[in-house]
Image (cartoon, rainbow, N blue to C red; front, side, top):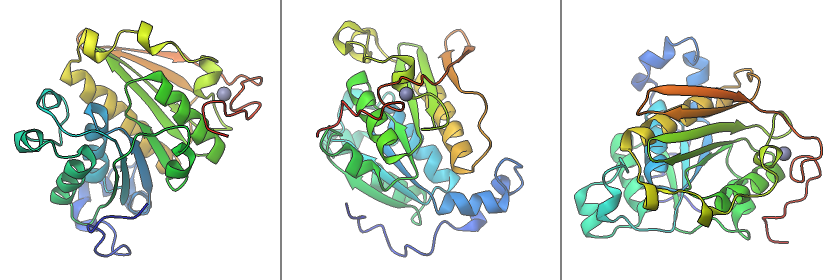
Length: 266
Ligand SMILES: [Zn+2]
């Protein structure tokens, strides 16, 4: 994993002059801003959620973003994948390259590490171990159970997010502090039996809301804000509703309890 040529000066970090409104924000402040500049976040997926996350995280001054996605940009992506433009789709540019180019345009001092692969059971822990935090921007539970296993294995927090139609879910996972995905649902749901964006559509405003909630949770974790009691957030942007469900760690969880990583190779 090597940074691309955007890495002009790795010790330079984001320009403090960009952030007067975050400096006065009690939740961030000067010290928090510097901490964000030193932070590394891995984004698993550069589709709707991943591009919205990358836009917010780069503008917030998170210093280094690892972008992981195997796909190229195509025309049906443009209604919800906010970093891409018509020319990216016309040329079928790899998503990680197009996203990195757009982040470079937003802020040349944010370092991106574009990796054009899918996260699988062999590479998951290796790709994610170098991050301080992992963002879920996938669209299936097979991938999320791999992220969950890898994150718990390497003891890194991650933020689950999913969308179908106008609704979405968000849950931050702090290994050894709160519940992991397998504490909530020990076995992965069958993705083929679930509604998904292809069959049930996606409202682009739902993508923005889920990504915004994920990013706020991510910034809290990066800034070491004391954790609230763990919650699963359920939103419906069409109705304008948000529901929170208290969730608990399961001592007998096969993943975070027994440390059996069944969704990783070996
Ligand atoms: Zn667990």
